Length: 314
Image 1 (cartoon, rainbow, N blue to C red):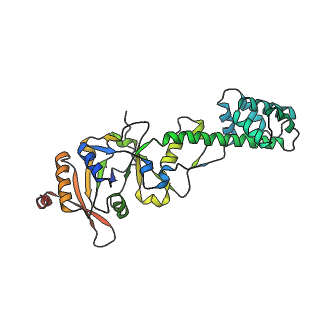
Image 2: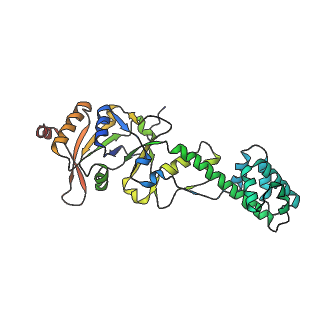
């Protein structure tokens, strides 16, 4: 069942396009096109970089508790203020037997060639501190491994990008063939747009905490990696539709979804006439506008094309 568009979404969205031929076909078929982020103009859109926050002791215990073998009780003991020699031996034994990542980290940390040498470190000064550090490193390594696995899945997402604005001179320049293209305006009351995600803008990579791995239904990872962009892109005020694990590149919309079309200020008359004929035939209720330079300030304004203008065009 489709979700209702969130109340904080703007009433209408715009999709400024550069692939004129593809969009003409989409316009005729009432579809929107989804693309892979590797084809986007921002190189970080497909980088999927992030920082991992340090895990709390409670979350580390929960993480190891997912195995169901009771090892979390030993982890809890390791984080106590002081463990006895026997308790440390039990912790090392159990973790080496049940957790391969711990065993590898343990051997590397103490430069041991074989796990049978594990008791030789019991008398090391600060052994409990080293043990805790190995557990933390092990948790961090497992987190990064899990992230890489999820990134492999996220790379297959297909994305359709939208904006709250339609008068950005920069966006018209690099998304609409230097103001020769056009911009489509959609009604977000349509069920498809109930799945829109707002893009976040930041000066730093997104930070992930333990929640995304402890809760398999948590969407933090996806939202952080696909929906975080550098602050320099903030002027785009972007929203995104996402499709996962699907072979589709197109999404069919009802004709009523298209509420307006804005022609670039540099679009030639012959192209404008051709598009107007198509729009009026397929989308009779769609409003048409021509972008123009404002005479009093550096900005674009939309001038509605009314019935009197149609006589000039045709």
